[in-house]
Length: 310
Image (cartoon, rainbow, N blue to C red):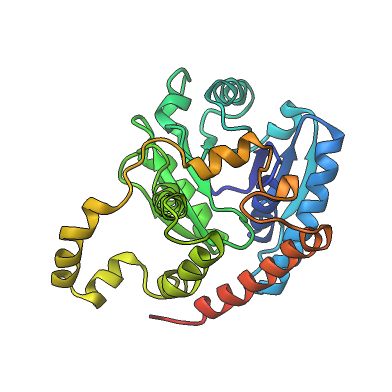
């Protein structure tokens, strides 16, 4: 297909506004769709926050980008060169909206899903043109994390993959292309493996939640942001890794269920920031200040990483 100039983001929620703002800055005409004016009002606020973050980050801006808002899906999809689906993580909902996409968009329009792990093959299996369906998994918050996973389904065409990668390059982000799909893709598999071991250590009474986070933030997180895991293996020495892994791997959690720390808290209705407390408790003042503080810290870290070549 020709260059992508118009995009439809279907579903605003947590990530849609940030995705839209990134595309807009790359010179894309974007329409954000959701089912109600109330949802779109929240999306407008989210777009303004994301625009502010992108301004603070600096970097290139391409002229011609814009964002509009729609509660009519047909109107949102009209003329779209690419569709970015960001509806709830339920396969039946995704299949329903993808079937709708096919009724409205051109046959060569690219259809992408921001699913965190539902197989792209399953999403595309009942469509007339499954070859143009590709996973485009953004990391949250999308205005701050400049990496997008590209995941092919069994029938995804090379043309769809290349068009998606070209768009990611156009907005100045990094592509992580999977050679094949697996549940959870790559980012979430690595993240959930880390969180499983962290929770196992808390469950077993080895360490408290606050001290655990201290270990990860300054012990490995700080280091991994500069020297990621595969490079770290070379730094440490493969012989050293082989030696330590030979006795440590068998002791690391292989829990296939969910941590008792988590199930206990969710049963009590303690779900994290959304309920004012989870593993930690938050005052109203902290809840109001945390998003801005964390965004500022992520901006500073990203600027530093962008300026380095290591």
